[in-house]
Length: 188
Image 1 (tube, rainbow, N blue to C red):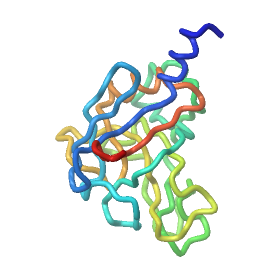
Image 2 (image 1 turned 180 degrees about the vertical axis):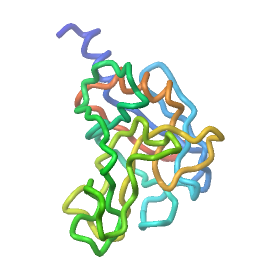
Image 3 (image 1 turned 90 degrees about the vertical axis):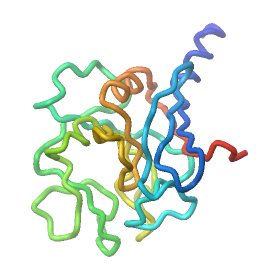
Image 4 (image 1 turned 30 degrees about the vertical axis):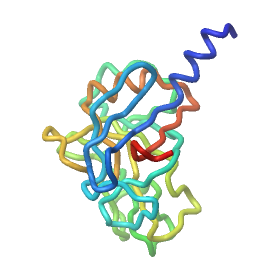
């Protein structure tokens, strides 16, 4: 691999989400030479994530799996990340007392869970991040995704969200070993 190829490869695999202060939900995602407006949890960011606190965890996370709504995303280019069409019966367990906490489940499901097949377009394109992976620590947060932002760019439940076009562009430029770091701007 040439030196230029190595530089391009590293640029495409490392992304950073920067917030101005821990209580802000407005942020920017930096990927290579480009930056994109994005939002984080409506409660800001935290180094001590708790289920339901509406905060995005600080840290470095791998991009694991991309899911998309096949009835809405028809021209998804081949991505380097594992990519699967969402199914209407899929959900994500967010019940800390459930043995499948922070994992994809099939609905109907008795435990509390989030519906992945949504009417509001937020999960038309969604990426699972490596936060609190199984075996998950109960109560430390679940369903931390990179997904489509609401039209008004209001904060999320704890995820990172971009416009659909920006998210698509970022994902096309990701390698299979992509990482995303969430940090505060003046964080050293």
